[in-house]
Image 1: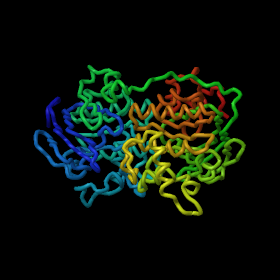
Image 2 (image 1 turned 180 degrees about the vertical axis):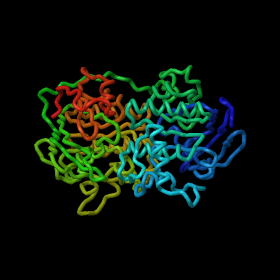
Image 3 (image 1 turned 90 degrees about the vertical axis):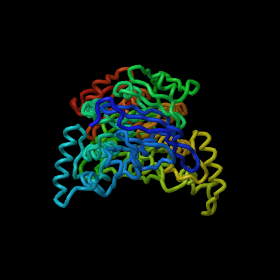
Image 4 (image 1 turned 45 degrees about the horizontal axis):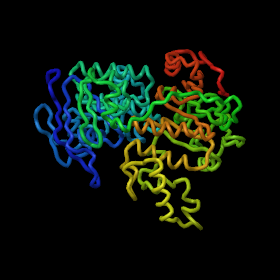
Length: 519
């Protein structure tokens, strides 16, 4: 076992390119025993590539990787796991048709013939209880929300005993209290001589919970500094350069007293994948020029609520109205036609078709219409022209002609979805975790697009587990817990501590109800 502070992992002059474009260029990185090492950088800066090389998913073009002073070749995730390296990816590696327990042991060597699924489930439950990562071991992955699936990925690495754990945006879908619990676990692991690489775009996480920080920019090292000597402005400047720093404006609540309602949800009930109630009588109203934010811990009915509003899941009772139209039973296509824009939390699974090109994805909702098609025949030139315009207008970086969207970074995936949705005629934007996993610049850009919606007289319904995002953007904040709207605040009456307690169920339902314009 390495002594605390001793270098256990070292990367030297790492190079990795895709289609002739360098993702990592002469990157150097080292990790010490017993430390939490932060990794910062814009989307496309090379963080995910570096981590995927360390996890054995990609092979470097050149460079060296050493573990405990010995040069190693990590040719597969199995080999990385054998060396004690585990990674929780931003885009999950789970099989939807298998249970939580089955996913944890899938492909795992050396389990022996006596291993039973019941024993695995028991052990998973013990780890989940120990680390506060609540998820049912026998639940199928397709039944779980994005936040719950992330917990499964963390549990998988803990179950497999990784001594080096790479966490890619681990708190993106966690409530404040859950984040603190996770960081307690991370620090406990470091105290036991485990090492953690924390990939995060949240400055407060990096500054509050790491020992050192390495910043990547444009695939190269921008520097490594001790966290105790770093500041948020210094790290942000290292990430994107002083000339590109976004301005942080203060949120000024919009007045909507006489505004026209554009989305009205009344006593909505929705059943979850397991046949039990997921949404229990939710009601709300979104007016023109207003952002209504829904805060809550993943797994409390938000996914089912979003899907019901988007037409992807039927409501068992209640109603949904878009302006003066009842769309409760309308198809997703019909809802889009009458004015609903939808940015889902699952970018590659729901928002975009991963096997299609960027051009095809950008016209998924308009390919039946002129100029993209005439008399049922697609116009490739018109589609290409539209794609070029949208890529430039929404700053979709790294997109090349006929490029599969699965090769794009998270921030550019989100820009592509926004480009498609916001350029269609609509009155309401339904956005779910729109900046999850994005860097500072991409987050600022996405939030700018959301604010612009209200400037143009549209309404926005925003779902997010990022409390800072909800409080920064929303004119009315609703809290969702166990399928119910349990509290509402305006920016003037917001009590963040009470809101967090409501989100996690630590405070009784109905403990705080502000006036606002919630139905």
